[in-house]
Length: 290
Image 1 (cartoon, helix red, strand yellow):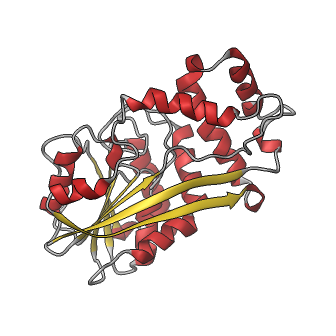
Image 2: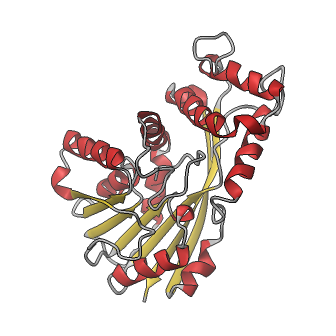
């Protein structure tokens, strides 16, 4: 789950994970996202309306492992197949698994989930897809594929964030109030054509694919930056990636103000602010194969 919605090319296995263009910067954002949202992710795994304890789990679009490790913690007898298009992210996940002593409970699979033919994922009793489904070119086909691989009675959890997280107060920075909203608006305009399913209501699509939707829950995220220095690094990383994608969509004044915030050694750096928060929402749909 991994989940900063930073602009990226569309690809088959998500979280902003390009096939061959994964970078350490994006991987670090995913790791920070996992660290900062740990409690929220745990609350979602605890909420799932499971009939039995899952033993065979698939994490679709696993990134660097936020969902994978949350699921391993929640279900200590389970094994997880972690699927992603990025070889770098999968290697990072394997390194973490060894450090945590759970490498025997994780198998990684590199795959483009937009391909018609999927790798053999067995017959899982739980499939988890966090911040990945909106990247699919053919989500209807992907949903049917998940339905086909799930064991009868198995559960599919689709988790999505409500756009990019916000970090700054509305009146910041002092010389360009409202800058962050204008930055996000430019990013949304750029992504609208590439990610038409971002922000979608997955309930009807899950029903159309043959699932029975058994629950939907939205969790508000509002974390004070003073709780963790990681939030400053997270905000910097997310906004740096957005800036690289939408620079031409900003006014010269806004671009200059954004660059001052992103200058980590400068006096106006985000890292020097004491008023940062992480504000977003996460929605989970729980759907059963009947």
